[in-house]
Image (cartoon, rainbow, N blue to C red; front, side, top):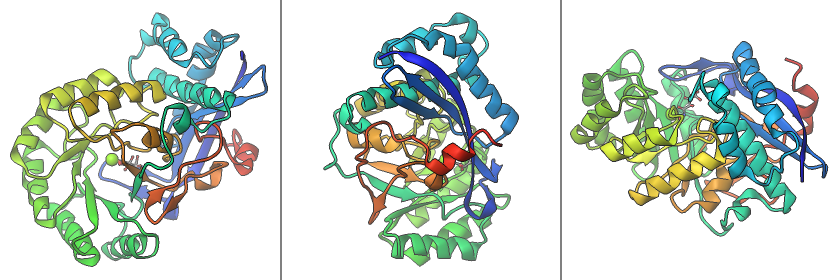
Length: 370
Ligand code: 0YR
Ligand code: MG
């Protein structure tokens, strides 16, 4: 199998109710800038990054994929994905300008497309190629009921619907709003509405200073919260270490970390309990796997962040022993040929060959028209 052509793709998918916010980000669309990798056998591999749909920036990512990395891939065998990852990652002219950021997001999208081809070449879903089993239980927790811009009433009724009608046993709420008392009121209202048996996660998206986190996150223990996510700034290892020693609620983080070495630093410091790598911010499945192995060696659960809207991560979760819980956000549902399926709060192992990012017909007619 040989790579013959790389085709740029940009998708912008509307988010729920036209716009969502957490403490740090506001968006109307989820961006999926990526690539279709064509081969001499007729197989096409798809891989996307995940962005806030800022078109000029999405174009930079796609340009890096096609024009910086692309020429290095033509003629190569996509099944040699780990060797190709090393080859691309060693390109000093490209990595000179960024070991993280756009170059790394570009490599992530390519890596996913290569794993997609490797799985399609043997006509297997990626989880099977990675040694997983459809019998494994992969639970879903839903993030789409807890946005910070939802009114308290909307948030409570959305969370109730997710639990009572859709069968989720775990939901995530955004905190880190301007008034910490309001944060706590919102968490308390959802806890009271859902009862004691549903798990509730909270996510501050890097908003607090250390003393704010000690004060507000420290009180989450009253509501039996599963974790507080990104309580303080994304890269602050020492701050999270100190917080972890101070509060009883476990700490989750990782969605903003680009490199396996950053995870090593957080884990070694004792600054994280739930490890949240993302295939679209790490450079793909290849680097994700290293992080998941590392976390497992410290007995830390891996609960991926879903910049891919869970399409690739579901495969990894059916395969990697550190993963048994996975976020769910529905924004790419209409844009993927086989959107992830959840029944009674558990993922159903995908049956089609590949890594899960093949676009739907609707997406194929609308992409690149933005
Ligand atoms: C904006 N999940 C997150 C939104 C989400 C963000 O990027 O999607 O809240 O990525 O923190 O845990
Ligand atoms: Mg988060």
